[in-house]
Image (tube, rainbow, N blue to C red):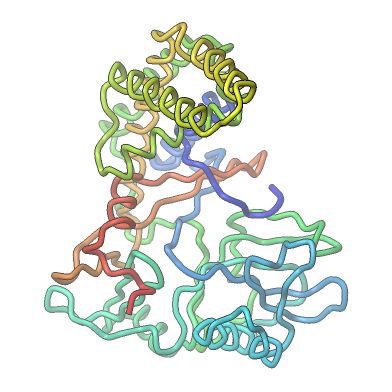
Length: 402
């Protein structure tokens, strides 16, 4: 992989990459099933998606050998990085809170003994962000920069580590290269082991670990996931490759399909049966083109979009039975993914909650990332309804809300 850019949901590989994407999605889920069934030779690495903010980089600039911290502007045409606390304080684009956080990051991360490379992580807290709160009559240290609140028992080894730290971060990506612009990234490389261990920095790797010993499929669960993936394979074979290629090769079309899917997620409702889903997509695409055509003032412009609408509808809906099978395939992948996520959620020793207007509510982690060991390609496994429900709910108090 190159830079760590936006990752797609595993079920969306069908639309993004067509035949190859569908095949890779099934194989990735098979590999995750194998991992959770105790087969050590899985072809995927897995990391945990932590709900941290902001994204932060730390490393050595190959151009001058100096240590720096940076935000996402690091990979701009003109890289934006901070090589001193004074540079951070002078940056007009950072608000007071971010200046404080980046100053602490620079001071503390410079003590980690980084000799080369660049490392990316999600900032979880700086001093002052960690609170001591009671949840179900037990005292926890809590922190939550975004939607999810992480909770660690005060009377635990982990709680003791967090209470002493000035900053907390979860590292997930390593970059190497002779220049910042040419750097290539790789996920899940046990980053924290490369650094000095100091009490003022609490750091974790995003690498998935079954800390509790409870995240393993039994024979019955393995058989169920296997059956789902077998059904997915059969459906995949019934879908014409040309249809998947039409979708994958048309940027506008696949974006319309994914955006239509997101209308259900944002409305907090499960995907409907495939007949309703296909009818809904037809109406969604038709309405989008009609709205676009209505904004155009010249007959020539309108004709162009009318013709495109006609071509797209023909390509997508002439064989509606095959399109329904595409959604059946997607649903099987989601079902298998959900079983895998549910099992992996049992692995963490850190509690996850939502802070609502009526107190704390238990929730699951944001999700996981599956990384192909051969290609380095990464896709996310997220319970879209659960996380979207929390993200868009006005009842859930987010970390940035005061």
